Length: 93
Image (cartoon, rainbow, N blue to C red; front, side, top):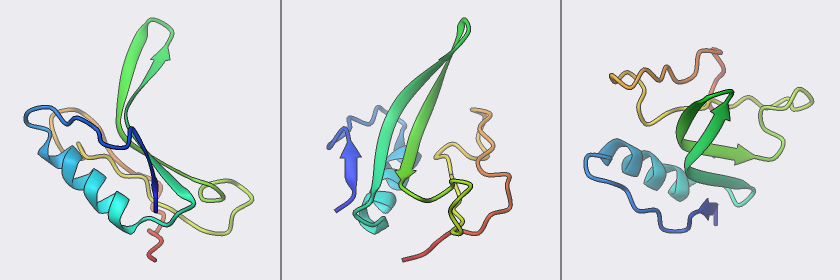
């Protein structure tokens, strides 16, 4: 089972896209992957929220031959998130 942090996140009102992404990822990612919800990054004096983050050992590293796509639940919305722009192919299981 995919590790989830927190195990049962509280999705706020209007967060239907984030919930759908969370549920799909948690249902289909392998045991070695982890999903993190609503994490914050502080860059100098600015804060940025990561809606859904996938951490997967060996995927995305320079040494890995596998390719992965990172996606945001807010892709294409007014939130300004652009999602993946690397052109990498997704890995299916």
